[in-house]
Every structure is written in C-alpha cells, then in structure tokens.
View 1 (cartoon, rainbow, N blue to C red):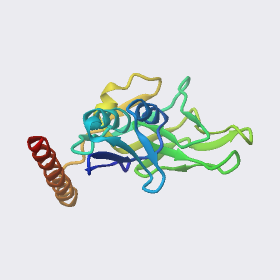
View 2: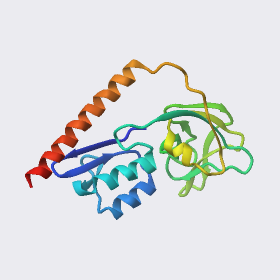
View 3: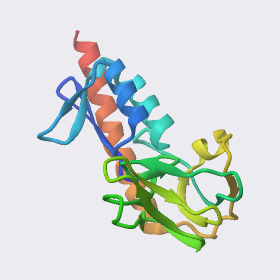
View 4: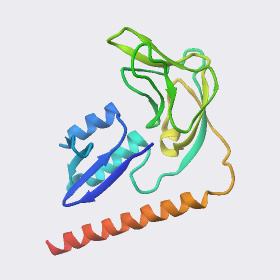
Length: 193
C-alpha cells in the first residue's frame, strides 16, 4: 500500500490508492482533487484531520504504522467483493480486475493459500470477488485497522517472523527525519505569525 502525505506551501497533499470512504471524507474536509499531481490537496489547517482519515482508511498517517501479517478466510457466509474497482481490505488492494471477463490478479503482499479471485457480473456493473473457500495471507497489514475489524471474515494475526529488516528500518528512519523537518517548519511558520 502506497500512501504519500506531503506538507508544503500551506497545503497538505495525499497520494493514495482509490478508496471511496476516503474520498467522501476528503470532500467533507474541502479537499480538492489535483489531476496533474494525482493527489488530494487540503489546506494545511486540516493536516491532523487528513492524517486521521488516512490512518482510518489506509492504516497509516504517513509517519509510523505498526504492521502485522494476517491470514484472512472468507468461509461460508463471508462476502468479499467490490463493484467496478479493486477489492480492498484494511486499505490494501487484495485483488483487481479490469472488466467482467478480465479475471482477477492478487495485490502486492497477498499470498493465496486456497480458493481464488475472479470477476463477473454484467458488462457495465462488473465485480471483483473472492470465492467462498478463499484463504490468503496479507503481509504488512496495518495493525490498528486489523484490531478494529468486526466484519464477517475470519482474520488471524500471524506470529512475527523474527528480526526486522535493516533496509526497512533505515527507510523508516529517513521518513521520520523528513517528517520532523516538516513539523519544525510548521512550528516556525506559526511562531512568525
């Protein structure tokens, strides 16, 4: 899942995968879609609300997010489908299709254990869906969203795999240092006023 939040020139911009609930919130925060940068743009005064919306719908606020690996089972009575867009869960693309007859491919970090994904429905209102016997592993799911989940699917947090990846830790350190620079600039701007 790729969510990029930038603060500059008295505005906050968010580049993120399509999520209808985030879009509704973005509009309620007077966000505007900038087609050139492919980002939602907000007044800097809405930064906290924007970061909270990203945390809620994508599992990250752009700074630090605890992640877990999970096993998801659709099972009897479980429904995992999406009309005319990617199938998402916990802000992550699980499977995507491009039309009724395109078939579906799994998203990044999704490991299929059983069952599968496909597309169907009508030519105009096509869907991406999981078969009822589908079980998959999602690597790097946002822990907060997993903890808050109360839906029909069976979600099991898997034991951690051991040592942290040094490259991932260095990348996280760089992101945090960049965010600290942004916060310091905002503080300086407020003190100048």
